[in-house]
Image (cartoon, rainbow, N blue to C red; front, side, top):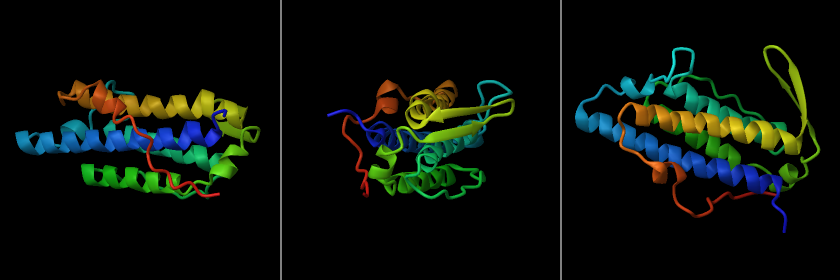
Length: 177
């Protein structure tokens, strides 16, 4: 049986978000235990022109949400970028995960050839659904999740590859028709 559009997106997004949520919980616990100002983590950047941790979480969520919206599996819901602490970031992840769990597997699977237009600052790119997932949505999502992990690791949080990879089970998706 071939992999479906749903199989390569929603479960992967949900698993990464579960792992990211666990990593954020470790960062919050570490900050509390050591008396570290949480903003050391929350506002961490690898370079001055990059988004801080909060922005990385927001962009990961926007990418996952945008993927299922653009491919027609759910209606769009606006999530303003106002998160300023660990609890709010965790809530953002939970809202995004809930939206993903509501994605229609059949509508997502039917989107392999749907046209997706992405407007960037200097150009517009048109993908078919399959190429959008493979060449934009998944790489962009993992860029932001990895950057969030790297920011926390760079600031001294004791996490490793096992934290990023997480459990080897398939997340519960509750996919609808």
